[in-house]
Amino acid sequence: MTAREIQATAKSAGLPWTVAKGQDTFTPISSVLPKSMVPNPHDIELWLKVDGEIRQKGSTSDMIFKIPFLISHISSIMTLLQGDVILTGTPKGVGPVKVGQKIDAGITGLLDVHFDVGRRPGAKQQ
Image (cartoon, rainbow, N blue to C red):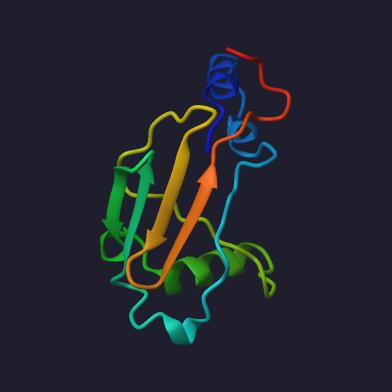
């Protein structure tokens, strides 16, 4: 999730825009799957629907950097602890969502999650 208005303000001021990605409620995640349930992490299909319409669909086989490399690289910079989450980005198709919309996402054959889009705390009403 990205607060585009915060991102635009930060960009125009020449400031880092990571604050636009770090708002309360911006990281909805599913339950965690044990490694043993994922037959091949390098070839799983990820998908996301908004109000029943596919917005994103892709495979981990399309990732530029493979998962073991990401873990190795990140852990060379900071300590990773059990329960830490590494966010790797998403397939093409990102776009705005509106309060009241329904998001369904998943890993084909392994997991589905469902969220309702709510108002960001502190956001201006439109």
